[in-house]
Length: 565
Image 1 (cartoon, one colour):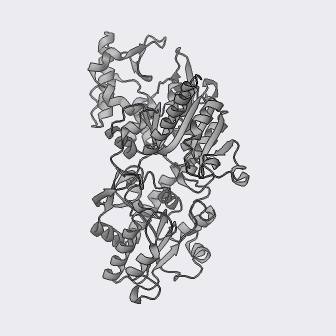
Image 2 (cartoon, helix red, strand yellow):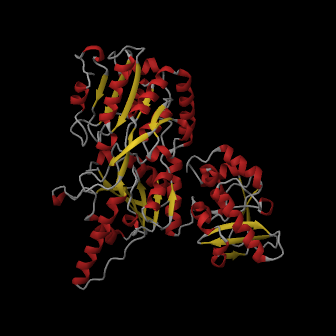
Image 3 (cartoon, helix red, strand yellow):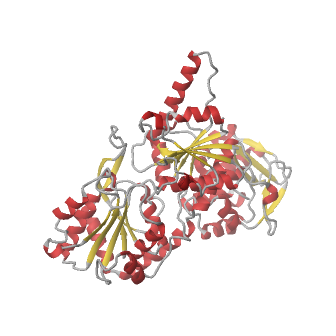
């Protein structure tokens, strides 16, 4: 299979991390990958480490105006004829590619040339705020959101097509706890006392990050509470980025090096955009922090928070956007009490972010400052969560969705271990043994909201043997439509699947398979029972009125539902 990937690459952005995770997994699975790369300008030294072709999205002949590769998109599709296109983007940037693709074909038709067929296109789409436009995604064959928050906002915005979730990851081989004293000596070099309480912030200097509130709230906290040993470390994009003038704000709020009681209380690190510092240096930097903090109005994921967790640093995050989804109880939170426009930047913004509440934010800062036990608890919980969020699992999960949408078989039956008595029913009724439900969920579901070990054990204890179709296992969020399809009104559109076993019957709905033990003599009543039970499970209300009549339900779907519950 040939995959044309459009997204960041060979640069220090979260989008680039996603690109390489997905492309590495696709390449490892034997597929041909070509990246039309944003924020990459053709340096062979940057692309050399990767085993696939990376081309700049930027067209050097147009003066650098098309940094997303809109004009190059139809050209690459026409020449490469990819089996599938992947767009790793914000939602509002997607329509531009298809507008230029349509323009390309109108020109061809005007010249009597056969139009270029529109490719099957999958979007791995970030969502950092409310009020997303679902219509921006209508030309995509499948949308993959980063978080449950993103999924819900796309649906609320009107998108009603196929939709999955694949979360992001962290390199725990690189980001891990280090000795704090040694890290401070390496990264800070005596700029603050060794026993200082350091609150760290990492990210772009963009308007949505609300670094102005970070500085303002920190200043109010230390001045009003009389805190004399707390420092704010800002490792962010420079003032010349898209956000605020950091030096001016530090001075205004009395945190400058020559301003009385709060003197020198902000350490400002402003590395070049797209280059940053070496990742080992970032690990040591996280290791300096007593607390990681964000006052962002909206995050698609918030990778620095994940990296901080992996380094054993407790996190304080707003209960909004992506942070309302993946961190769960692994981070301390504070409420947001206002809203403001977020994006797209300088392009008639329409998405709505959440403004951190001043009082709750300052109260949470002070509580964590004074409560070492709470910090230790969140550090431990964050470290445990980060250990389950790997880039390898994220990339493999996304690659399986690409293979599924493109009609490729992701996991050959012959590749499944036969060491334990966990059964799969294939399309023709063959039974294949696998290496336990826990491994199955790890491999098939990956890091989709970190399917927890205890969830796997719960399913195994409640349902025993798990029956499912190996080819359908590629679809990682097959529980997406359980509620919609879990009603008796939808029974006529459900297909019965014959597994060649008189004691087992299967139901198929839009490619999703449910398997049940036949316990009723009337097949129609059996179908009703299974569908009703699916509705109960999907509802998440804990009721299982027909649980004794259920033998198995698709493992990935149940795992996702239980994790959500």
